[in-house]
Amino acid sequence: MRTSTVLLASVCVLAGCHQQPPTKPRPAVRVEVVTSGLSAGGKVVYSAVAEPKTTTTLAFRGPGYVERILMVPSGTGGSRELGEGDRVRRGNVLANLREAEYRDQVDQAIGEVAAAPRPEGRCPPCCS
Image (cartoon, rainbow, N blue to C red; front, side):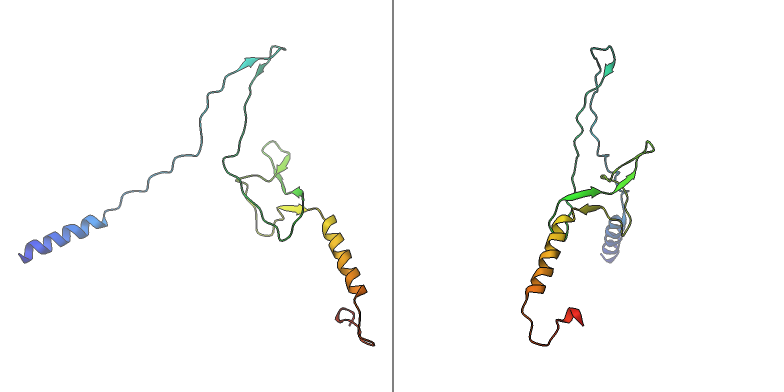
């Protein structure tokens, strides 16, 4: 009885240690058949619609309009806007917001500080 219990336990342990190799993930592409047509000038014309599979939401510390997006080298020797899959480094500025709204808020805050009543003979902390 003891021998069969030890044998059964050994088989269970060995069966539990068996690992299967991880399966390769399927590539995230969809294959479409492309057909050609002739334009009025006799040139071959291809028509396609490119749609993103996923989008990424960026968050900023304050509201505003995006004025500029980081430019990265393109494969053709030029440059293009940062896109999905591009590598970035820590400290890269990915997008700039329009500064006009912030300047207006700073000017308003400066005006409010200047208009605030001050105790007689005391200067606000920003002046010392």
